[in-house]
Image (cartoon, rainbow, N blue to C red):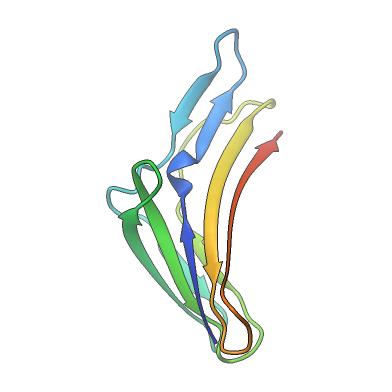
Length: 113
């Protein structure tokens, strides 16, 4: 079973609440330097830079042929995060499976502290 998930993470921002919100772009994905993959036994993950809806993005092509498992793309960032913060992540995905038809979706999520 092969899956492809293009992540439009170019919109991953840290927003610090102030009179005028300060937005910091954490990664523009012009390169994938610093990203590493973590996978469970029987899983595989391939990261690539690609053109997104506005700018570059990172695609994650993963394979869970071994059954259940997990894949993680991780990159450390050195930023100060205040007690009241907000992260916004936009992702899009296409799920291809040998047992079902192809499905696509796009989501924007906001996480606050």
